[in-house]
Length: 269
Image 1 (tube, helix red, strand yellow):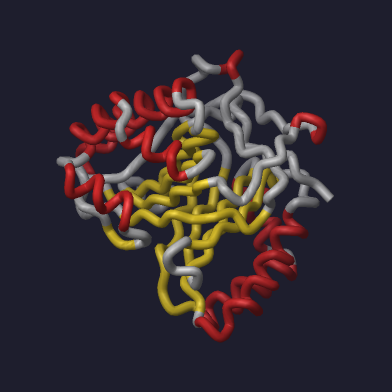
Image 2: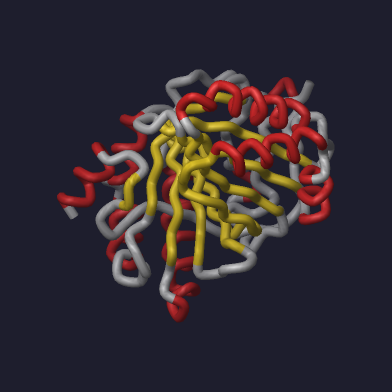
């Protein structure tokens, strides 16, 4: 456990010793946050992007312990804004997690919490390989609502129906600035799409050449429509041309939290 904790605090975007973080559940109406409710959050936010590969016959066990950890984290930790868990639609044994903390200190509280330690005891033995964890900062949007919790819907359960893309790509150093211009242009255009609830852009703190996007759409059709836009196609072309690695992509539905929690950034133009 000590070795893992040291890795969490010092290792960025490398597989960590048998562990990581998660959450789950889903269903209900999709709330689009009103602009007046949007919180202004600054660049101190600490984003944790995780990929897990779970043993095929232990998916239910993994989901169950993660729901428990997810509820404990978002509901009881003051500094945990959200903890989204996505299951890949093509490879259901693969999961991605997007976690948002007020700062690194809030993350330190999380990894020492009883619910996280209980999750760790269960999850560490059912992973195919060590998870990949990247600690990131927000590039876009800075002024947005990152909170997921909707108190009146705390007990809603079930798998969600949103379509979510969790993607990390490492870009050639000399092309990074130009690539960012493409991905930020795409994010700006996506914010105008009615069925795109959020399009976040994050940068790995230790490896600035690795850029993540976290995209939430109302359904698969909304995602398909976005992928047909000129800005999405231009960015994808540059990622293929200039990409040299990275965490890769998880594309699927929300396991946790439910649709009735907040997925919208509340950011429109």
